[in-house]
Image 1 (cartoon, rainbow, N blue to C red):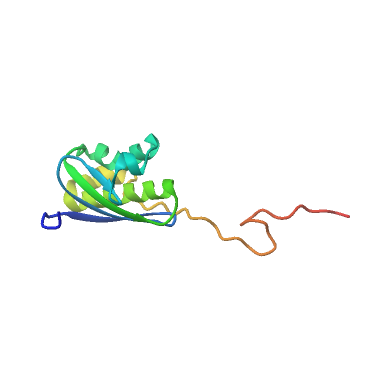
Image 2: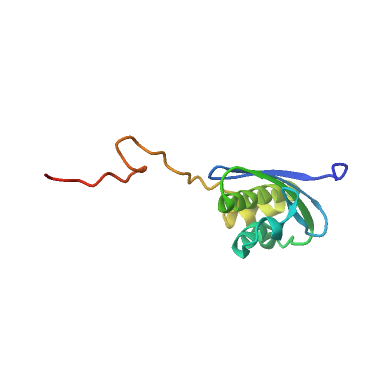
Length: 131
């Protein structure tokens, strides 16, 4: 597999980081050594991950090998989507306009806000008592 030329993309979302390699192939997506369906059983996550391929019409043209660490399932799925979009742009610059228009190349900056002292969570305050 390493002798074959590949295109690389790093995707991030929340605390998840996905390292994505795509190479010409039949459309197989391997994530952490397991198939897409096995690693992400929910259809919503599978659809999210396949979105860059569907947007560019390249579903079935590339095989993807993904390593993903950190965060939860939804964050990891979004990180893989981001990484796939970046790798597709590395493979073919013509995909950039389409992916940019759909917002697939933009890193989602939303992360969990830290807890502040004197509060129960980031913003939730203890109940106010007058007496």
